[in-house]
Length: 387
Image (cartoon, rainbow, N blue to C red; front, side, top):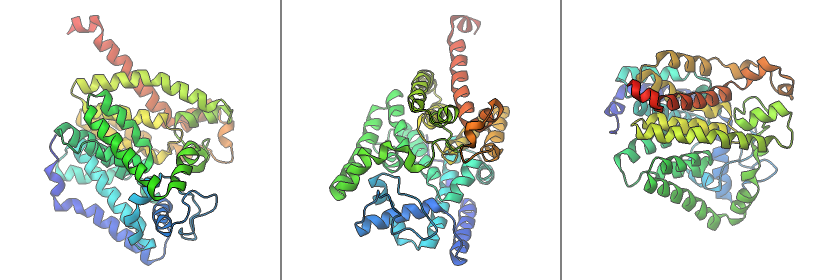
């Protein structure tokens, strides 16, 4: 699949330029946006200062308006080092520009629209809750998604010798993209999958040599402690683990049940990935893996669900416009912002609030199961004879 030439159109610089102007305005007026981007920069500065990355207290390198721990891998701190060169107030603007560019790249690869539709689609995508929240927080979700999309749908399908490396880099930053390593294996791209795994392991291994104590602490304690990133029962954790913990009011067996449900759901998900890829639908196969990964992760904040963008783009380009409209309505509705939440209110939901409060989880799980049932019907002897 060739890289879309329309990405070179100078008109596509309009949105990134506006993002840069906004970022500069935030900096010059001393506003505070992008708490997570401040943490990225803080982690890089902490690494340079030789201070502990994973501490119970606040990092000394954070601005006084941010009180968040560094929850990313040791390799992430090294990969964030370029942000240490950026003035503190401008970091959000830089991350936002890169995120908007990443958003455009993803839409271009998945939908291959005309230049004006690409510009308009990027602008419209900003209205989706996972997208605008990612930008507001200065999160890196859109950038990591672009890494995966370019790697799996461009480099890998071209047979590039570098295929898999971007997936490895993405996983070395945030772990959750590791789900795309088995995706490459299941779709028969073993060399790409091994290259992704080698890139991930190599980057993390280097950090054991650079900061052995921090690296050991992360992999033996922090990596298995989802509470470091916030309350798993908060509505914005749209994962199976979040759903079960909310329904059980934090029962000690919640994670076990969530993992068991995820294991059962893996059967139709993997089967769908293999079937879709073999049928020549690599984009759809990738999206099944992406949404299954969001369900399986112990913590999938609502802003992690930026995969709604390529989903809607694919539905539009394949003529499934009613489904595209439904997906757009779900992710633009702000439903997870409107349901009563916080201070354990989630434990008091009835059936109606529970469905709405777990909207992303319910929609993704039902879609994977529904698509698997549909594929089974299409592959049945009766269906084949009818053709």
